[in-house]
Amino acid sequence: MTTITDTKKVSALEAGTVKIGNFIVNRMGLGAMRLTGEGIWGPPADPAAARRLLRRAVDLDVNFIDTADAYGPKVSEKLIRDALDPYEGLIIATKGGLKRTGPGVWYPDGSPEHLQEACLASLKRLGVDKITLYQLHRPDPAVPLRKSLEALAELQRAGKIRYIGLSNVTLRQLQEALEITSIVSVQNPYNLQFRRRSEGVVNLCEEQGIAFVPYFPMGGGGGDLGRNMLRRVARRHGATPHQIALAWLLARSPVILPIPGTSSIQHLEANVAAGSIRLSEKDMADLNTLSD
Image 1: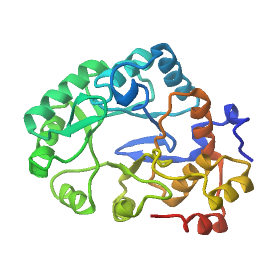
Image 2: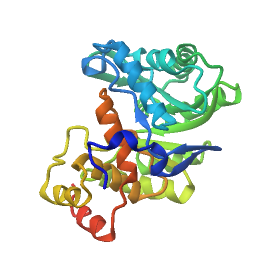
Image 3: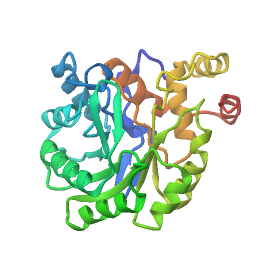
Image 4: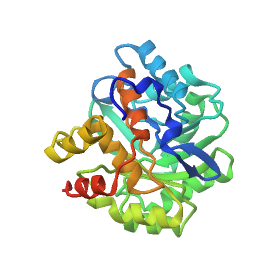
């Protein structure tokens, strides 16, 4: 059984693997949004602790780390470079297409001009010549999706990015994007209790061999992971409700790559340990009764 007390012995390798383009990554990644200040604004209270957490993730065989220029803004990417450069064996995925004016304030800018500027700035902050996975952070209602994606395709042809991903898209937008360029990943909010808006997206990703990267994989504070059914399944496995929520994602589809974010090494180790939990058919049937 996997418990919160023995997680230091567990590796992200136990969660299996998924393809990102031609790269193979372990199916328990790390979201680096939380390695910033309150409201995802400014530096963390303890930058050294954030760097230690990033290094501990790599020690646990986490080889997919997701960030964005808007996290901080700019803070998360800089911390990742300070802690992990030269990124041997790692996929550092970042995003562009959102701007910030203060804590908790986000607004889209999917213009080709902004995406070009944002990508070049992320290259510099990360200290790389090419970003392995560059994701459109959110479609901009003021800019046709085609124009945003054509800008990313141009960056790809220029050798600035290797693969293109999407974030916060509907099924229709994903279908449109696939007619414009090659997409290797989709990152949407998705978890055990609040998932129906992205069910079609997950299914299409599985059909097309596209990695689906759920953010807020444990609810993001929006769901009650202490519900009785979830607690009962957790007790069967000697695990926490949060670990079971992650295990459910891994069992839901082989293309799902959870990226739970945290600023705590203890929570990081518990998240990675969830990859060793194997849910039964009964577990899945019980858990699937929890939904919005």
